Structures are given as C-alpha cells and as structure tokens.
Length: 410
Image (cartoon, rainbow, N blue to C red; front, top):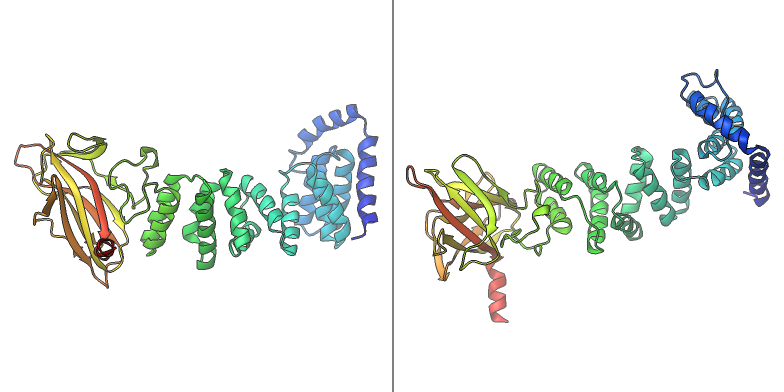
C-alpha cells in the first residue's frame, strides 16, 4: 500500500474531525444513543453509531455498496467512535479496496481496543505475516471481550504449535487475565495437537508464577479421567495446583493449602456422613502439624478419604503413621490401593509391618495390564455396635521400590 494513500485517508478523517464543533458533537451523540437502539437504523438516523449499525447490517445482507454509504455517514457524524471507522474499513474490505480498508482500520485501532471488527482485522493481518506478538495482543483483547468463534480458535491453535507462540500465551496467562478459566476449561474438548500446545503454554505459565482457578482445573482433570486420559488429568493438576511436590501421592502429610482443595480426583476427597466424619485438624503428639482425624461409628470398614493416581506397572512401597485418639500406635486406620474395576492391590485385612514407632508400611504390585488408574483409599476399621472410635493418620508416602534400592546403593 502506498504511504500517500494512508496519509490521504487519515487526513480526510482528521479534517472531518476538526470541522465538527464540540457542541454539535455532544448534541449528535445524545440523539445517536437513542437512534442506535432502533430496530430500523436505516429509517431513523442521525448519528454515527446508528449509521455504523446500518453499515454492518448491509454487509450481513451482502450489500457492501450500501454499507459503504452508511459507513461514510457514520464517520462524518462520529469520527472518534471506533465502530464508525471500523464499519468503513469493513465495507471497503468487502469491496476489495484493501489499501483503503487498511487505512481505515489503522485509524480505528488508535481509538480503542474494544471494537471487535478492528481486533479481528489486525488479528488476521498479524497472522498472515506471522507476527506472534501482535496475534497474542489482539487475541487477548478478543478473549477479554468473551468472543468465541473460529478465528479465535484458529489463533489459539496457531500459537500453541510453536515454542514462540506457546511462550506468548504463557506471558498472557501470567498476567492473570479474566479468560484464564475458559482457556483451561476448553482443554478436555481439544484434539491432540491443540491439547498438547495449550498444555505446554500452561506449564510454561505455571513455572513463571501464573495462578490458576483450581476448581476449574479439578473439573477438567475429572473430565480427562472419565474420557480415558487420566495421566493428562494428573499432569494438569500437578503443574497448576498441586503445590506438594508433584509426587506419586498428593498432600500425603495433609499440610496442603486448604484454599486449593477442589473437585480434582487427584487430591483427597473427604467423606463425611451419618456415623462418619473425616477432617484435617491439628495433630496430637507424637504426630506433628496437621493430620487426618477420622471418627466413625460404622460397623463395617469404610473409605474415609480417597484420591486417584496413575502408577505405572511395578512394585511400590506404601507407608504411613497411624495413631489412636490418645496418640498411641493405632491400627484402626489403614491405607489401601486398588485398581479401578480390577480389585485390591493391597490386603487391607493383613496388618502392615511396623517399621518405627507409629509408622507402618506395606508393599504392592501394579500389574502391567488392566490397571492404568488406581485409587488410594484411607480406611477406618469397623467399630463395635454402639461404639464410636477415633483414629489419626499422617505422613502417607508412596514410592517405587526400585527407586529406594537405587538410593540405598548410592
């Protein structure tokens, strides 16, 4: 596009702007706000916004010539309203007058970021030349306006497919934008490449200090589990909300931030009902910090808390510290591991071996087939009829035995 064309268009708008007296603009603006609400903007007109509305209506009806006439009237009436100049640019674009459209959108872009057609125009322009920074900037504006369409989805996909684009998305997420929850919530519905790109951006953002809505993350993690992609669900939870070290077990010492508790299947889901109460409380000696207190009058063994994990095939060591109400060694609270739909991996009815003080331990094996997802359950033993028993559990650890052997040898 020739610079003279840009200057000519911008100059024309400037002359128009200067020609309108301030008092006339104020009066027209008041009439325009009323006229713009009309369902027949072409019939009742006196104002820029109404004419711009008519221009866009004509474009929808496939009449760019009428749209151009209305858009020019709109600019003359309200040259400082970005919607009027973007209407002019849209009409010129529809007529194939690309250079003039570019000049109009250049002006519109200086008048405010909330004009949707202007944002879409510059998004397309930046995408065409591969300007990742501008794509991210315009995409951020559209997402802040809660716009959802194919152009936005394509831009998100495009950024997610390159390391530069992933970093650009991460930089936006670090700023805690209002669309962060939406960005995460859409993950479970994405195809493989789109999913991978967005996950990488989330991981990068998390390492740079971005915070995420853990309730939304938990819901998405649950969806991924139900769709057969539990490892991805656990990875999402760990990189965004699990601040307990990212081990095989989440919050085994019950010292996690209570504000992060959510519906994530990869953190403890406490069970409280008639005759059973499970809650994290300050622990009695010899336990320290916080521990899980379980009070039950149930006459059968029952799960008091549970979480999912995704252990690979192999042998593992599971240990914990248990105590009775007075803090002495207790055996009424145990931990079991079972495959979803495939039965117990640990024998909950055989007392685990004591290793030191109140700590007990057991081992189990995850089979190579049929056990991609496991449930770790904290269980309370049956109470006698009419009795209420209380037990404590803390410092639950889970590790592969092979890793322990390697550590002992080093």
